[in-house]
Image (cartoon, rainbow, N blue to C red):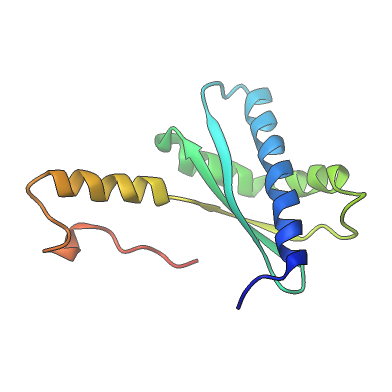
Amino acid sequence: MEESQRQKKIAGVLQQDLAEVLQNAATQGGMRGVLISVTKVHVTVDLSVAKAYLSIFPNDKAKELIKGIRDNGSQIRHELAQRTKHQLRRMPQLEFFIDDSLEYIDRIEQSLKGKEDPLKDPNLLDKRKKS
């Protein structure tokens, strides 16, 4: 099912503002050298839930950061509500996921360059998780 224009517009607004909020929080939290980007935001049809996919660099800090982001989800939601109060009546619930697509592509390229070929043996790569 294709997203409506309203869903796309809200997702775009949330993506831009969420990226700013998360990067500012990381900088103020003393996490220098960490880059957090919001790669995609999907909003449900009823506009009640927004799924945000985050790309975190360096990768070794991703699990720690995503846990902290999820734990502070209500504060992030409040900050977003303040920024978008003239554009949205209700702020959707936020769900955060790690976007590992770049890492997945890199692993495929590295495997293809090496002796182990994932095209011949698909068990060499982890299965992608649908979320």
